[in-house]
Amino acid sequence: TRSTRPQRMLKAVQKNATKGNPESVISAIDYFCKHSEWAMNVGDEKGSILDSVVTEVNPSTVLELGTYCGYSTVRIARLLSPGTKFITLEFNPANVTVARQIIAHAGLQDKVTVVEGSSGDLIPQMKERFGITTFDFIFLDHWKDRYLPDIKLFEECGLLRKGSVLLADNVICPGAPEYLEYVRNSPRYESRYYPAHLEYTTLEDGMEKSVFLG
Ligand SMILES: CNc1ncnc2c1ncn2[C@@H]1O[C@H](/C=C/CNC(=O)c2cc(-c3ccc(F)cc3)cc(O)c2O)[C@@H](O)[C@H]1O
Ligand SMILES: [Mg+2]
Picture (cartoon, rainbow, N blue to C red):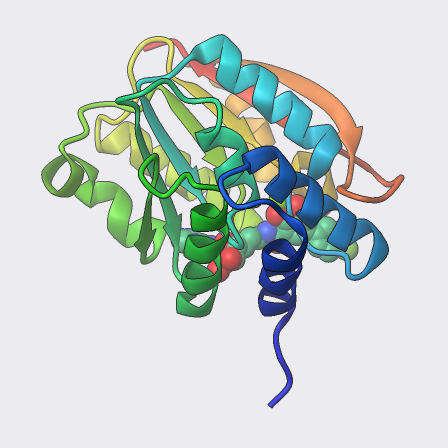
């Protein structure tokens, strides 16, 4: 049967990227998406914003929602200090399989744990299963209508501390209007919008960075 887009992306990485070199994995995926097939990776422009926020926060604990093929996972993991606890959640087992291979090609498999499952089920298990008290940095890039329920789940589970940073992709395209309304109007968050473009296109998109105030 016909291969999937994630499988073709993995093949492109294995063919064009140097093993153990995260930058070459990132470039190989961006090249594939620009010249072969568009895919919903955060991409190079928004990826640079992600890089700068991760570097600024220098987190000890990181959570990513929506691994997909592992592109942003590689971008984040390559910047983390040794000993950082990084967990990424993905409920599609085929995507988990591809992401683990792309992360391994970058040589970053020891920096991140790819957990198969749904954020709604796994977020409440973070403390008991992974020994997390709070997350310093959270990247939201899963189903857009789940951003709001999941940020509320973080609050309910006591997984945010004063200064925890949440960065959300696609707040314009496809859009997460309820999430934006919440973080921009809640007194418990200080929010800032980073204008950019939808990955590999000229369409408007952007990322929202929200700091939990406690
Ligand atoms: C709900 N809880 C969840 N828990 C764990 N994993 C979850 C998940 N929801 C979704 N996932 C996984 O995340 C991934 C889904 C991401 C959703 N992202 C998008 O829809 C998206 C979509 C676009 C997009 C933009 C314009 C357009 F025309 C078409 C698509 C651009 C993006 O950057 C996107 O991130 C999949 O791998 C899915 O299996
Ligand atoms: Mg996205």
